[in-house]
Length: 224
Image (tube, helix red, strand yellow):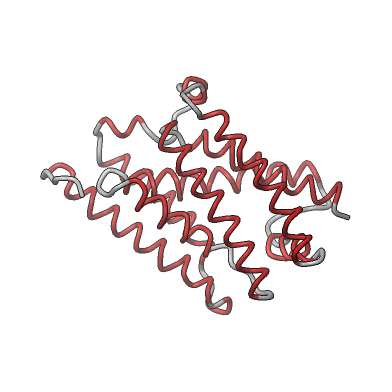
């Protein structure tokens, strides 16, 4: 853990409050009847901008910054890592449907059809962008990015990825749900590494959009 100064003690306390709140909300997904996991995203966004507003240290340059987006993308290993979730998304669909005899794509559609309009492609594209951007600001920009100032990266990456995956739990066969959550966890670890290297949740948003779009396009075209 980092050594504290008076200047960052308050930021640390606010970060812990935000992280704890997101963790509690995400964990409610374990009991679907009491699920408030979706609220974790606006809470994370709120805390992200709250900390940026009260703490003007050099780390504020990290996170959401349009003016350095292309230079952030050009950092070593960033582009290959951004594209990697496209491969994992397609692989997860192929492997999942093979293991669960076509039920994996049905499960994915079932847990996301309340948020995504699969029958309206232009609207679906907009929804994918908004969902990815808001989740990345909350989970990579705030939960991971702000906690990295005080705790080791891999600890923050593991916890943020685990909670993010838990927040996507849906009712279904245990093996199917576990596989779904595991693939989300793996991609979340990749997003965390991208954030560490790029220092931008806009870059992780691109990767997140590509991942979701590739997975959806693949099962809509080839897995019918």
